[in-house]
Image (cartoon, rainbow, N blue to C red; front, top):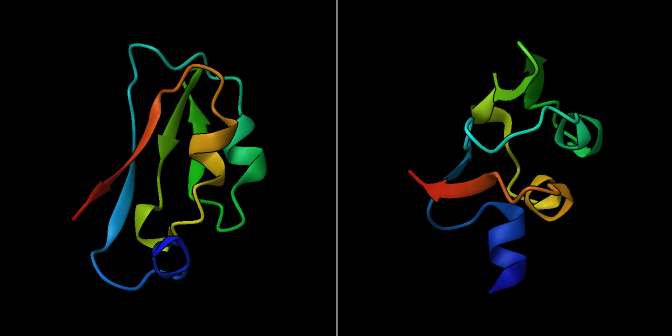
Length: 72
């Protein structure tokens, strides 16, 4: 099932950043292969969530656990 999620089959998922806990370190923007994130006003912002390929790299890289992938 993990392979299906990673390849984007089934429910569409999109990234959400908890702004209150995000430190704006930029790890998510650096690791994202689809360039979903931009750092704006010292916080991560998923400016292109439709480009997310659901690889979970951003979730795994986030030191403050501020990123979630939610079902559409």
